[in-house]
Structure formats: C-alpha cells, structure tokens
Image (tube, rainbow, N blue to C red; front, side):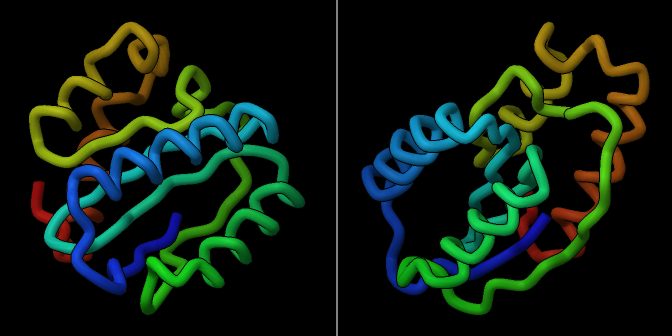
Length: 129
C-alpha cells in the first residue's frame, strides 16, 4: 500500500483514463487491488506476485502524475482481498461501503474489521472519504 500526491490538477477524465489503462495492464499481469483518490491524494492497495508488484511500484514512482510516493505498508498475504477487481476505484465513503458490502468482497470473513482498518488508515493519510 502506498500513498502519493497528484503532481498537477487531476480531473475526472484524468482519473478515468488512469483507471482504464491500469485495469487493462493489471489483468495482463494478474494484479488486483483498489485505488482511493480524494483531495489530490492517491492511496493504492496492490495485490499480486512480489516481482510484478515491485515492477509496478517502480513504474508508479517514475510516473510524472505522482509526487511524494510513500510506501505505507508491505506484507505477504495468504489470500487477496480484492481478488475480483483488477482495480477497484473508490472516491468517497459510499463507494468504499459498496466495495466492502459487495458480493465480490463479502466472502472475506474479516471484511468488516478490514474495512474499519482501511477507513482509519485513509483518514490518517488525510484522504477523508
């Protein structure tokens, strides 16, 4: 999980283009996760093979649309939380709730505790949804 600041004004069309390209690339590389965007900040959870995640993270660090890329959390997981999304997008509290209440996520036994943890982390990073 990392956070970064958008390096310039990042509008709806910019976000839409980024998500479309990312979803396509993530499908090719078997990467899943969720992108949170608000107040000019990105927070992203990336799931997949370690080597592919490392390459993607390097690409993100070199992407001119980002400033101040900061790794927040890195660990190995036994099962993906976002296994049914090449890239879920969340821009507000309602979208966050939709993700955690969806059938795609509901089979996770700890989804409510993970949702609380993630909401707390996003608030701590200044991405109030």
